[in-house]
Image (tube, rainbow, N blue to C red; front, side, top):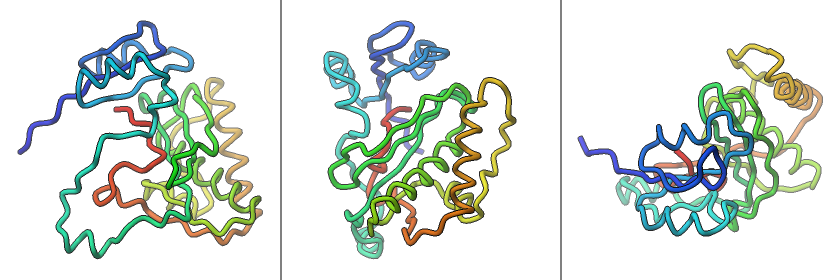
Length: 213
C-alpha cells in the first residue's frame, strides 16, 4: 500500500497563524474560530509562500493532477463540459463549521459562497450548494449543466429532501432555515439543469473545491 503523502497546512486566520505540519495542529488553530481561513499544500515551501499571499487567491487551486486511470478509462469518461458551473462544500468536523460555494468550471471564478455556518455537515453543504446553483441558473435562464462530486447530495436533491441526521438546535437554527428554504424551492420549482457527477478520479478535485484537508 502506498504511503500517504505528507501535507502542510497554511492558516491565514485562526487562533494562531502560520504553517503547520499536521492536520491535528491545523485543526487546533481553526476550531471554534469564526471565519477561519486555511488550506493544505504538498510542500512546506508552497505553504510558506502562500502564507505571504491572500487566502482567496488559493482556494480551489490545486497542484497539477495526474490521473491513475488507464488511457482507455480516461477516453471513455472524456473531458469536463465547460459550459457548466461546479459546486462544493467544506466542513471542519462532522458536524463542524461548514461553508459552500459555486464557481465557473472553466475559469474558477466564484459565483456564490455561503457560510461559515456554526454547526453543519459536508452533505448538507453539498445539498445546499446544488440547490443554490439550480436557482441561480434558472434565474439567469442558463443552459449550463451543474457539477457536484457528491452522490449523496444528488440523491437528496432528486428526492426533494435533505435527509440529514443532524438535529435542529439553537446553534444551527440559521442553517436549518436555509435547508427549509432549499427544500421548499425544490418542491415549488421545476428546472431543466442537468446535474452531473464530477469525475474526480479522471479530472482531479472539482474546481469549486476549497483545497483543505
